[in-house]
Image: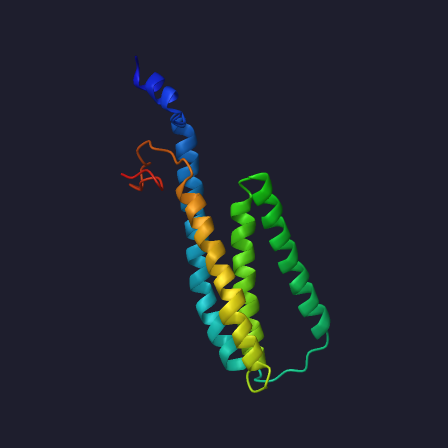
Length: 167
């Protein structure tokens, strides 16, 4: 019996075609380049904002901003619940998006409440609800990713090993 037949009997995924692996390697490299340039460019922009933004600002559409954000968060939570019930792999993306939105919500609730008596309620909600739920979702997403099947063929020319191959 050949190795391929043994792998099929074990339920292992067939090895991806070398052209597919090369395309994945190129996309990965391009994505990492874009992210690196973006991160480097964000440093001076953040410094400019830190030096130029006013410490106070009168907001015109406060209700629209917060209700809109909460609708976005609600949509992400509902999508995560639906994808989870359907056992659809998109639950990974929606779960991570929900976690990021929860962290952002906690940050803005607390930072915008500084100097007011509402800061204590905002901090309590962040510490006991939003951040623990975000952490739980990130943990679950990481567990799902760790269970995924990844290519096991040797890496391309840049010497990387595909994620999750154990090599």
